[in-house]
Amino acid sequence: MPTATASGTFLLGGDLEVRRLGFGAMRLTGPGITGRPHDEDTARAVLRRALELGVNHVDTADAYGPFVNEELIAEALHPYPDDLTIATKGGLVRTGSGGDWPKDGRPEHLKEACEGSLKRLRVDRIDVYYLHRPDPEVPYEDSIGALKQLKDEGKIRHVAVSNVNVERLAIARGIVDIAAVQNQYSLTDRRAQDVLSECERSGIGFVPWAPLDAGALEPGGPVARIAERHGATPMQIALAWLLRASPAMLPIPGTGSLQHLEENVAAAEIELSADDMRELDALGA
Image (tube, rainbow, N blue to C red; front, side):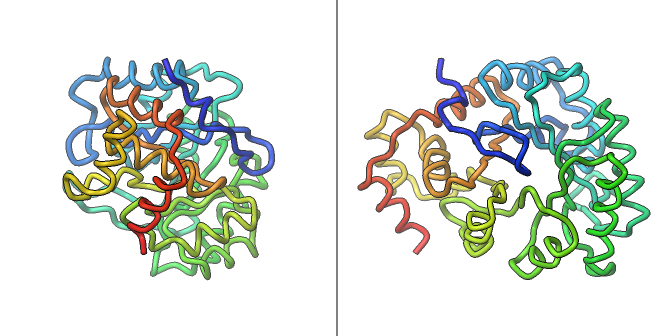
């Protein structure tokens, strides 16, 4: 059985060695990323199987559920293996069961959110803590400053940011060391290329969310043809491309299915040729 070991490793924050192919836990909730999943036993089994397959970087957020996702991770995996890195986020709140994700980047909220995540994850310190999204009503420096304070207090090991441009990343780095950036990025959406390039130059991990957006590609197109040549699925090719696209890339594909989890992890062993890469790179031109 292929494992995440084939994806190689990355040193997050200079001291957390993670396998480059991780797991995003967001889908392990109810419909609309709200409430508990219908099949909690399977959700916990998926988390445990991810670790069995060599994954040691699990991503979540307090807004997923809300709170449910962090609770499930603790239920399934605590006490945690020494080499497991858990990343979570604060700065979004949930007010209903629909698509509402209001921002709250006030320092007092972020401190309260961090304390809640510490309790739900059953840890004394969070490995990687993201500001989930900039709040236009709060100076960005104030939000990042709150995370720096939490780091100084020993409640956060590494600070990270999400949904940022190059300018916001520079502001954050002027306040505190940034271990990772999480932005939308995939074969079909490369708007964050300049942020990825800056992460590469600076040794910052780049965690693409919606990494399997290649599902939007047309049937019979280049991705499907390359997948057929490799005896793989288009989604596996999309993941293999991400891993080849940058040494700083840390994809976290998520699923609630044991079968899809194993397929995603198997993508780490796909060896794309130079011709494959040229075809796939051209999709973002």
